Length: 311
Image (cartoon, rainbow, N blue to C red; front, side, top):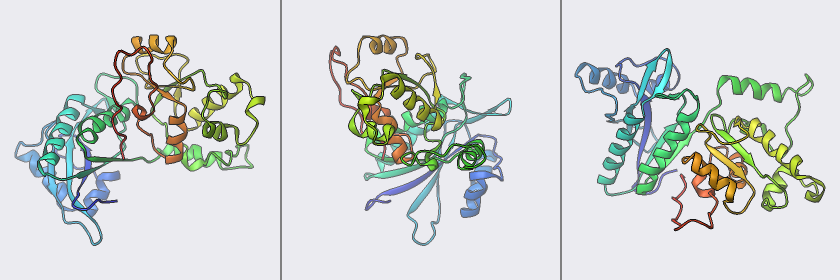
């Protein structure tokens, strides 16, 4: 989707080694735009390929395509064979991209693959995607530009999905309202479910989890178990109470209460959202911005408007 006069940028995370791999998305990009690997390798030879310094490479798009340039973002390190995102390099690249887009004087759209790997200094795999998307909202969406993230299942998630749909070999069929093609929406996120009760859940949330059953016959504990099973089915990691590595607390209470306020004091970066966030993310087949579903705090000294969601 492209708005009139909008510049379209395809963004790609790389390291600063100057060696263009022949696998995965690297191979696809090299096939579509043969000049990219040459530019990347030549930049290394000239000493211009450094972490945190993005490169905007003009490309010739095919018929019917509106791609303007490919944004090479050197933000990855290799540590003990693992892909590690350098947060300082990420901030630098996003700030430079936002400045360049704003200088064009019209709307721009940025298209990103899902960020997978570790953060530098962090042992919790999966947090990189969440942190990167927060930076996309801050630097790009916050400046009026569109940002899109494209998700794909890992090999293990694909095999789990195929086992689920195996039917007669002992696998359980997914409920009709929970399509198996959305089985990795929450992958990489750590969540805590707090007070998930059918009596305080939105009507469409009750319909989603209860599939038309009478909510008056479903206890709070049973409903909470349905929510937790769905979080795990969508690839999320569950914890009983928030820790430093917890990304989101999901609840059906209408406002931040004393317990939630205490947790937010312990873990300042945790997002407290309504159960609606889980349902909307699964329905859209991608993680929705938690800030768009944050709970209000009646004791907050001032209420600031939530940032606009990522398109």
